[in-house]
Length: 618
Ligand code: AMP
Image (cartoon, rainbow, N blue to C red):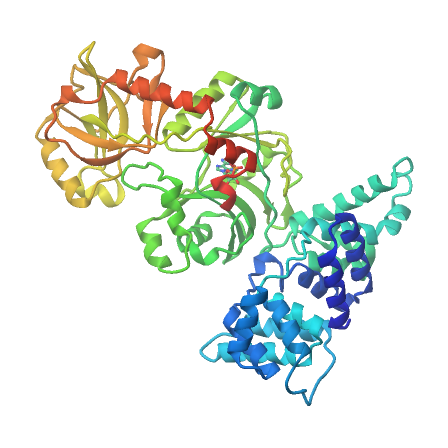
């Protein structure tokens, strides 16, 4: 196919606002493409060189494009830049300059789609010191042979500004349209009483099912071209190609979840990155939820997969998050997110090591497990994990009791987790969709506590891991109940302390250690050492949550309260234990949070209508 023809289609698609018309235009284009080039045409329609997971990026900045346009047109760079300021689109700038080129090129060939793609590939792959010059040359070579309209797209594609508005669903719709007649013949009986659009949707579903396990529409289109609908059978799960993830539905309460699922698995919802891990002997790939290949970012997980997964070949999923080695507590997402970066990976993997909590397995030693019910997949998953430091199974309970689900939810939130995910024990692995196989229940409101609290230290935990040498990893802190003259525990604090501070605290606290729980302390939790309630610390936290572990307020309101993500600010030597924050103040703060929760602020309302979530990234 000539690139000029593709450019004409692009122009038509660009002008079109009806999705149905776009779909038929696309179908027409894909019909015209040959088997050899149809994959390329699909990628170029997507404005890419390959599917997301192959991560082929152009790496071509505007500066290079301006330079290439100047060289080809014979105008100075400054002129090109001026035009760019005026038009705001380098594609249109290229089109105009190619139209009134100063010098006519001596050598001009008609551009084929393949030739353009080949140069684009070379641009993406160029690396090293001479790569900039090479990229400019390759682009200039294309522009030199381009007609004005071709130039528009030759520039927009590598700048990743094609913006035709064609999403993957439209491409799948177009494919369904192309193979509709063949489908009708094959499925004559099944479709006898169906309407035309229902038949097309049925075919579209079949195509999408393949796309969900092998999200490469170029390859799919090519396979269809080669073998017709029979070709779909050849699209299979493959190590190194990410499966599109199952998504979670949401319901507002434990009761509704139980009503919907009955007896179900309830898992802790960890707040980190979802990782899809592929292992084939000693080769490991890790993909993000958006199917980016992130293998290089997580060296400790790669090593753990090699050691802890007892399988030659496997594809499984889990959530990775940073864990405070000293206290065993989870770090909040804001800390874990620091691991998503391109530089200093080794250093960070030591400072902020991740744990991977695995929750599903889709493929094992040549077998597709996606059709098996979740309860079986979980058993299989349990069987392939060797005990180790990095990879663990997600925590899970199985229940049909809403009260138990609710208690478990509170326990999870208190531990610094996001909530729970309930899972249908009989569901298949549903790639790329939400179909009530998973239902999440999250803390619905993240009420930042703006004030700090003053809490009394009533005990401490010895450090584990890197903190063992300090003899102290976390503090057990309590608020004061003046009515009963008792201290009620509210938090285990493992953050906000420097190494020096920990040494200093251990020195101070070891002097006031006592053998058993001091009488004035009211607690359910037991630290490694109890201490006289004497020292007061200033503490920051994100929120107050219900707690099955802490005793704060439990005699007043029937359930305990705890701090989510407590961080030590400083020692308050100016306060006595009895001057600490009281239980009643805590109850009031907790109730205020609830008020805000039931009366959404403008900000939360806006977020709800926009569907905005910080988790979009995961
Ligand atoms: P959300 O992002 O709020 O829609 O919730 C779904 C996400 O929760 C998944 O994509 C995972 O990244 C994450 N997650 C955390 N823990 C689990 C778990 N135990 N099972 C499944 N997903 C989990």
